Length: 397
Image (cartoon, rainbow, N blue to C red; front, side):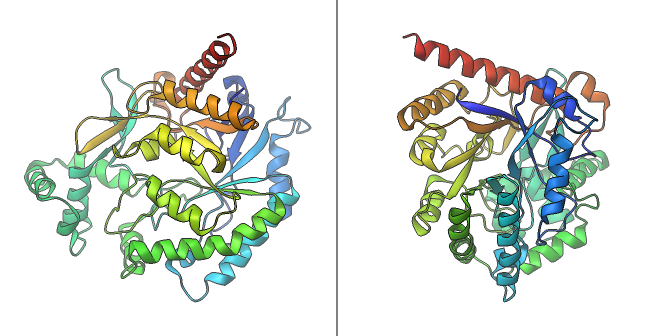
């Protein structure tokens, strides 16, 4: 087995029930304590309570699912910004790591994206088959940036071609299209029922004024030098998630988007407890990234895997494709994972199918974009079949 099949679960309020996850064939869940404010310590009691929801001793479910990865233990913005009180938040982060390790949870996914997590301009993009996917369009982003957010100097964040296309499109854009754009870019993250208001976004951007990519990387390395030694001591693996998309947005720097970025991070803090969440979709959004090459280069630092694929419609737009389609080259990628696993004799890595399409019965349901049940079920089934076929073929040739 190459991967330990997992499923992201947002807790008791998730529209996808634990029984659905078990029936999908997952071995474990990827989850977090979304009700605890960012920057606060995760207490042992809260962690154990969450584990109890997954345990077969819980009468609500007749089976057990293992909490195999934390996604995510968020990093407070003051750490990313390098503020004077960052060490106070780092101490709370270290305490959360201790508490998770005490409860037997040893793989921690996190990201270092300023203000915003993953970002799409349309979270309900209709595909030719009628299913819905997540979509990014640079022209639409420029429209939001220049004409809705009205960010100062926004014009300099885009090529002249995109600026011209955005100006022309905005002249005739409908209210419905603007509403989709606003709702998509100000969408609440899981656990944040209030979401971004325009005021919150503007305040967040202002807080990063003057922070360059170089400074953000310095702040990331400062954080890692503080937490990785403790993670090593606890036998915990930290797994940074690549930026999504892997380029600057709204003038915010992003520093985890390429092999060069990863190399700088890992050279600065060489301990393998300083590791990577390999996300084929986030890295694959940039045509410059060779996924197999990156995976081969950093395999021993990969502690968690997200598998999905994107389709590049044009130079300005991509949408999330079916898991075995698009630009990821999933067959070669999974084959490379198998070859590395055999070479280094590693246990199966936890993997989850990322961002499924909204399809079939889920089209009539209210679900978190990218995380409806049936689309991810299809993705997991396809990936399990691909894994089984590659494993069988390699062992019999």
